[in-house]
Image (cartoon, rainbow over all chains, first blue to last red; front, side, top):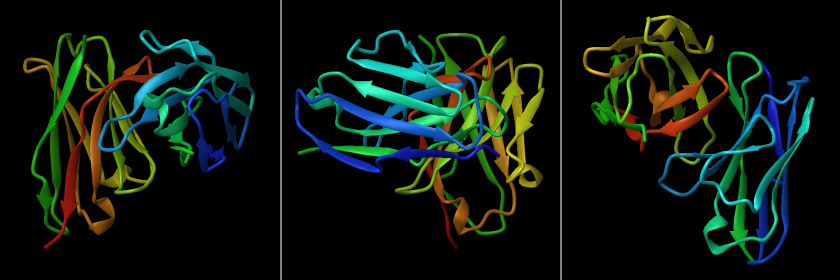
Amino acid sequence: DIQMTQSPSSLSASVGDRVTISCRASQRISTSLNWYQQKPGKAPNLLIYAASNLQTGVPSRFSGSGSGADFTLTISSLQPEDFATYFCQQSFSIPDTFGPGTRLDIK
Amino acid sequence: QVQLQESGPGLVKPSETLSLTCSVSGGSIIGSWWSWIRQPPGQGLEWIGYIYHSGSSNYNLSLKSRVTMSVDTSKNQFSLKLSSVTAADTAVYYCARSNYKQFFDFWGQGILVTVSA
């Protein structure tokens, strides 16, 4: 199975900050990498698919980059509604696997 | 807009079979892959498996011997059965649509299933 790691595991930031979350795969996965946002008690919500494609309806302050084994999710200017947990997920090979998550808190 | 809704018992006894159904509305179950994903309380996400409307499926090998997924196109539903459950199977279970097995673009709200005597 492909193992996914994320860093940092938690992060405190302020409204208006630029934030970067990293995701690394245990082997190369091309651009088969997706990002989800999850708020407490809610289902995950797709933000970015295929490493850099913004899902319909997702604000443009979210962006994704990377290929191979290293990927990044960037939030250009944090808004109050962005405080949540973020997961990466690889779909390069079955079983699909998720990163452990990055919790983004208000500073 | 596709909507998904999980249903089933919230409490299952150890060694019994967990059975959940996902009802799809706002679109046909035909032509898409569908998935179950679970999340133990306070933990990360685990993919359980995919199923196509034809019945073709892929399961996570870590659960494969205990998992069965099925589709009922007449009801626009798909289902999950997980046998011989233990406390480790306690989780929120989500159903989701998979876009060509590349990403999960629509999710149900999730259902908490607790395994306890």
